[in-house]
Structures are given as C-alpha cells and as structure tokens.
Amino acid sequence: MVTARRRAAAEEEFAAFAAARSGQLYRSAYFLTGGDAHLAEDLVQDTLARMYAQWHRLHRPGWAGGIENAAGYAQTVLVRAFLTHQRRRSSTERPSQVLPEPPPREQDQTLRLVLVDALAELPPRDRAVVVLRYWEDRSVEETAAIVKDSSAAVRSRCTRALARLRAQLGSELAELVRS
Image (cartoon, rainbow, N blue to C red):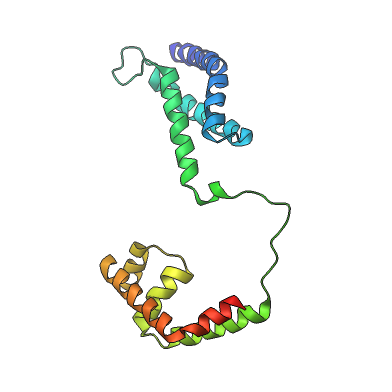
C-alpha cells in the first residue's frame, strides 16, 4: 500500500514536471533541429519518456544517485536524444515532391560493362577490397574483417587498386562519364 501511494505520488510529480517543462524542452528542441517542429515534438516526447522511465530512481529519498536538478537533467537527455538522431543516416533525408530523372540506360550499361571489365583485370583480393569499399559502401574496418586483413593493408590495397583502375581506364572512363 505504501508502494502504491509512493508510485501515485511519483506519477503526479512527474506529470507536474512534464507540464511545467515541456514548453521549454520544445523550444530548445526546436532550435536544436533548426526549426523542424515535428522532429522537435518527437525529441520532447522521447525525452519525457526516458525521464518517466527513470523518474522513480531520480527522486528516491535519501538515495545518493538521485539528481537535484531534474530540469537540467531533462535538457541533457534532450540534447543526447538529438545527437543520437543526428548520427542516424536517415536524419539527413528530406521528402521531395519531384523525383529525379533516371539516368539514360544506354550510357549506364556501357559504363558498367567497362568498369566490370576493368575490375576483372585486378587481382582477386584487390577486386574484393574495391567492391566492398566502393560498391557495398563498407568501412575500412568492416572490409578488413571480411578479407581478414589489417585496416592499413586494406587502405594500401585500395589505393593501389584504384591507381591501377585509373591507369587502365585512362581517358576511356572520362569519355563515358561526360557523354
């Protein structure tokens, strides 16, 4: 019964905190997002949800791990939620009403065939590194793990392979890309 009373009191206290601080959190989030009102609302909701999940720990009487400034802690949670959102790849995507024109198929096919032929001339490990790094967009570390080599070796192999491709393709690649 004491626990139920404490829980109800904590929920009321959190509701009062959320009502009092949500406007300030929204304004901060609005400026953090560069004026994106929808993202700002999402960040405030995420912040308040995280605060609610930890509220019983934050306000435990006599507990050394509690915080004295819940508003400051909420600002910290908001900024961290924003930074986490920015690290996602999808955070830079913006909807568009007009889709870009697809490239002409003939030029694309010719360029692709020339590149495939040039890749076939590379040694297998060099080809694997180039494909993993530039076709599959893998990091140096991921590529190194896949080919079971060091990161430095992958960088060196990549540099040499690209130099071979440039030497092999020469002006032919520049003509295909321009036309």
